[in-house]
Image (cartoon, rainbow, N blue to C red):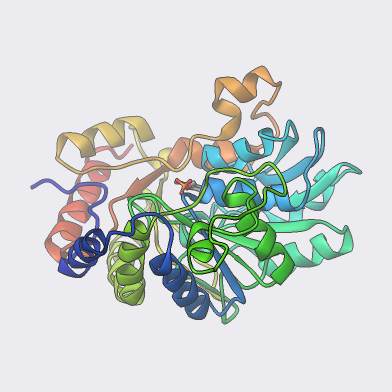
Length: 382
Ligand SMILES: Cc1ncc(COP(=O)(O)O)c(C=O)c1O
C-alpha cells in the first residue's frame, strides 16, 4: 500500500464551480471573490475578510499596513515556514526568534517578553499544525508594549481558542489556501481584521495601490477612472480560485472532522508507547489538525529521526518534517542567527516527523501508517 503525505479533497462541486466560472467569462477577482470574502467573514465571525493570492501576501500586507520600517523587530517562533520570517525581511526589518514549547511546538509565550526591545513592532504567533497559540497571554503582552499582533493562521482553519474562532483576536489574521491546507484553492489566502480602515488599506495595497478594484469600477458610471494612492502589489486572487473556495468553505467542518478522526486514531495508537511522544493539544483549544506531528523518543531507540523517515518511505508512507528551524538556513546563518539558545527547538527538531493526515484518508490508510510506525520503532528499540 502507498499512503501519500497529502491528497486534496476535491469533489464534483469544486469541478463544476470552476467550469461554471470559466463559462461565465469573468476570470480575475470579481463577484465570486466578493461572495467568498463575505462567506468567509461570516463563517469566522470577523468584520472583514480580504482575499489575497497567498498567506505570504497576507502577512506581507499586514506588516505594510502597520508601516514596518527598516531595522524594526518582529517576534515570531523559531519553528515556522520560511514565509513568516521572509516577509519581515521584505522591509529590511529583523525577525526575532522565540523558542517553542516541547509538547505543542508552539511559540513559548513565557519567552516573549525577554525578547522585546525598543525596536519591536509586532508579534507574529503561528498556530502550528492547527493548534492555536496562547492568545490571551500574547495579546496581553502586545497591549502592554503597544505591539501589533499578526496571526499566522496558515494551518488553523477551523480552530478555536477558549471558544473563540481563530481569526477574531489579532489585529490581522492570515489564512492560507495552498494546495495542502485545510481549505484549498490551489494557491490563495485570506486576511481577517476587525478594523474597517485597515481592511480598506489592505484592499488598496493588494492591487497596485489603486483606490477601486476592477469589479467595483466596472459597475460604476466612470468605470475607466481610478487613482493610484500608493505603491501597491499584485496580490489579488481570481474568481476561478474563489469559486473553489466557496465550495470548500461549505465543507470545511466536514473536512476538519475527517482530519480529527485520523488524529484521534493516531493518538490512541501511540499514547502508551515508550518509543513515541504523541503531540499535545491544550485542553482549552481545538486544533484544525492541518498536521499530525509525532516526536520519536530517540533515547529509547537505536535509530534517529532521519532513518525513521527513510524506513517509512521505503514502506510507501509519505512523511515530512515541520519545520527545519529558521536558523538552519544559509540566509539566516549569514545574518548571524544560530540555534544555540533555542533548546526546545533543537530537542523537537531531532525527534519530530509529520504523519499523513488529510480529509478522505481511509481507516485502512491510517491503520497502515500506524502499523508501520509501531513496527519500525519496535524493531528499532534500544
Ligand atoms: C506557517 C505557515 N505560514 C505561512 C505559509 C505560507 O502560506 P502560502 O503558501 O499560502 O503563502 C505557510 C505555508 O505552508 C505556513 O506553513
